Length: 231
Image (cartoon, rainbow, N blue to C red):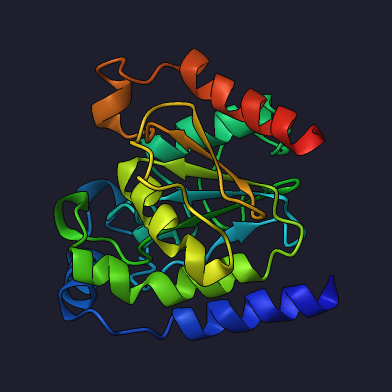
């Protein structure tokens, strides 16, 4: 475990210094300087956001990217915004988190057998990274996922991460079906000798406010993930 902690720690230390995508660097730092009125007294993180959770995790969740006033503010994935509220409530109900809320890096949240990361590590304008920016971030994700030797289940939160994980599978020594399976909620894809991929609608406000994603639907994803871990 100490070696894995070191690997993930070294990766995080290198990641937060990344300035490869000029557009994303400019945007994340602009947001961190101008701030939202509700957070004007806070110091924004304003850098790439590392993954978070249990370094021995068998379950890894891959989201889209940090929210401008969420993880870009707090410095922890899915922390400080409504998407994170949905995610950590669901993880708590499924037994993967010790508490149902995530407000700040020092709020006591701990994940069990679970790690949370993203396809893109800097907040993008309009929550829409360019294809080149996703590609630029791919080495970070590949190296991070490679650290989890006991990885059994991946959950892709949103269509971009579903597509990205299938694209990156060969670099991780996994096979992806051909043709690539279409994205859908609770769709399960076997990656050869690698982990099982479970895809889910992202808990964005666009999905949750319109009831495209309900809490029951989201809970079913983590019930399914738990069952797959136990098989």
